[in-house]
Length: 169
Image (cartoon, rainbow, N blue to C red; front, side, top):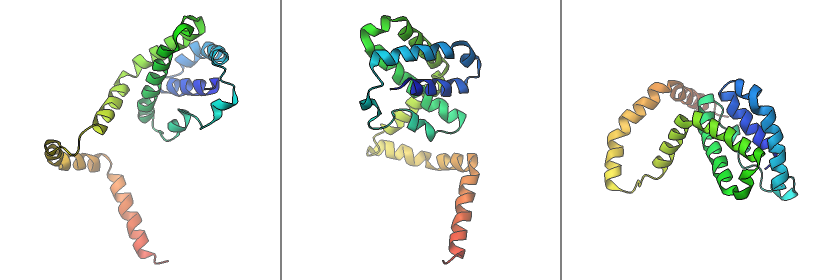
């Protein structure tokens, strides 16, 4: 993983929380990431194989609130990575990066809760009859909320379908 990717992620996170973070520690973090890059030999050619891990995923998350959700998950993954590094964590540049990530993680706790909600939804056993009955009970309020919160989605689709029907090309 290149320092540019780390820097990109830190910049993305900091953009959600204002420029104070950028001005105060970002130059030091960039220097520390350069040292971390040397520790990991991340400039070797095999690092580029298979594409990026995080930056490609960030591209489709465009709104600030959406970005906070994905960034909270990315930050937690970096923290897990630092927990698994082992003896390298005693180096000051690694500690600095870890502390910055930990501070950012604290500010993303609400977004991380949303990620957990999504993961719990994905694990729901939809073949369970009781879950199915509950889901059916909640279907109308869910659709109602979706349509009331996002009425343009429904209208745009309807307009686009009408245009397709008119044009018999």
